Image 1 (cartoon, rainbow, N blue to C red):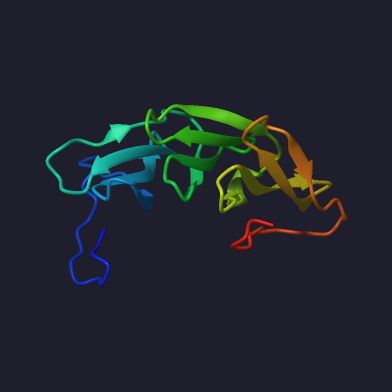
Image 2 (image 1 turned 60 degrees about the vertical axis):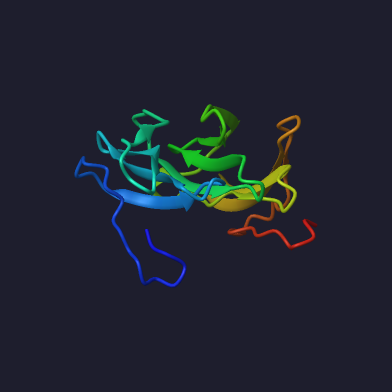
Amino acid sequence: MSDSKGKFTKPIDTKTGERVLEAKWLKDNTTLLFTRTHKGYTNIFSIAATGGTAEKQHTNELRNNVNIQLDTAQTKAVYISGRDELRLLDLNTFKSDVLATDEFWALYAPQPRFSPDGTPIAYNAYRNFEHDIFIIRLADKKTTNLTQTGVIESEPVWSPDGK
């Protein structure tokens, strides 16, 4: 981790010798949410950036949890779990729920993205060996395939107005 100018840097000390992969600052600006390997799989942890406290493990799965994105309010995180789950993590309770079960192919997991207002999420899943773009509404978990063209459409990004 580092300050905004990159002058102060400090490694995340998990005291495990495992690999830390992704790190995100949480809303309190003192806690880091990160993925690191555990029993060979990436799981989600948090730690106080100021040090002095042990890391907390939030997932303990024999599948990779990757590509974390926080919503703009920093109350939720979305990520890919294994090869077939899009999951939502409540950043207050650290409870994780499956939003959708789909075909993600774990080796090249897609990056899900919250809309600017945080209510739908855009993501990629495979159909007929090609990426399609999907939207899932958090309110009812209704999924819509936006593309269905038979060619690759990938890496969806929201416009600032969310349209």
